[in-house]
Image: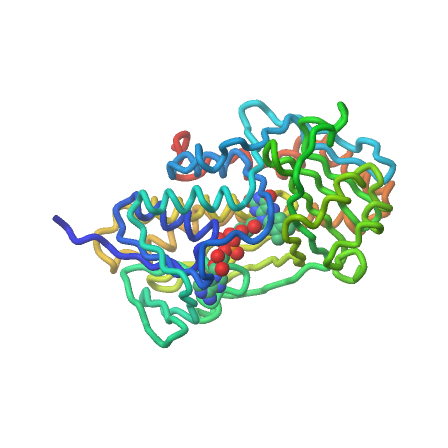
Length: 383
Ligand SMILES: Cc1cc2nc3c(=O)[nH]c(=O)nc-3n(C[C@H](O)[C@H](O)[C@H](O)COP(=O)(O)OP(=O)(O)OC[C@H]3O[C@@H](n4cnc5c(N)ncnc54)[C@H](O)[C@@H]3O)c2cc1C
């Protein structure tokens, strides 16, 4: 029997676990190095569009990841007076589900275990070489046929390979948390929807993720020190969004985190036998809800691109072909996620006109939802 090819994955987040599970399912001997003492998701809830759901199916993680998930009928935007700017129905054949991040991570972890992936926690990666090596904080060097850096925004793998072109941090950021759900939280006009409300530079995104929990994302500018304060300034947010004061009041039972967004561009996604993906390679603002989807999608596509490799010398060319195939969609998504975020800086009434005009334009709507409508490499519908 041919010897199994070996892979090292730096980072046990959404992208790292999806990549590891995909490689494991394709017959690789995989080890993940995660710096935290356990696999732990940062953030609260997550939107998973059709493309991400197809990847979860391909990894055998769909049922667990989406058990009890919220399946909304509309994505709705409202203005500072609470009036609907745009209410976009979610097409029946294009699913959008929202789940707690912890549930998604757990499902991917289980998929890794089923695929025979070895996971090492408390293992900080400090660098990498183009020869498929990862450097660990204790001074050890581990080597394999392939190494993949999925170590997030401040990727040491990206840095040590000199792949970064730019890392821009936005003026805007988000407070994210989970609150317990209660019967009566949503009136008849709210039920069954994902709802994004605007007021000046502030935004209040209400997302049920199960019968028990609702995910809140409160966005504002980094310069708005009171609005981004932790503990959350409930009086200020209730004043900006009085219709959600009953939800704001409940903030505090789960951790709250604040962060501005990063947009990362790299000159390429690999060097020799070491690749990067996920936020490490192509972080985008969260406006399209596609950063995690792109990370999972590219992890699966990487395993597919390497499926016929029998000799490690063929890995660099396979990685280049992988990037060539997958990158145009990622670049597109990054661009449109950033563009969407620009409406933050418009006066309320202008923003409403722009959103309404843009989303009723078929070409623009097609561009915004291109990733959601994409059939990812390696999934059941892919050619
Ligand atoms: C406010 C906000 C909302 C978002 N909403 C959505 C959404 O609804 N849908 C969506 O698809 N995406 C969303 N995203 C984007 C999504 O969270 C990211 O794109 C996704 O988490 C990227 O996954 P990743 O595995 O590349 O990185 P991460 O999730 O950051 O995981 C990186 C992992 O690597 C580990 N690590 C870091 N450094 C090291 C090291 N040196 N050594 C070892 N381990 C290391 C970390 O501990 C972590 O476990 C959102 C982002 C933000 C900021």
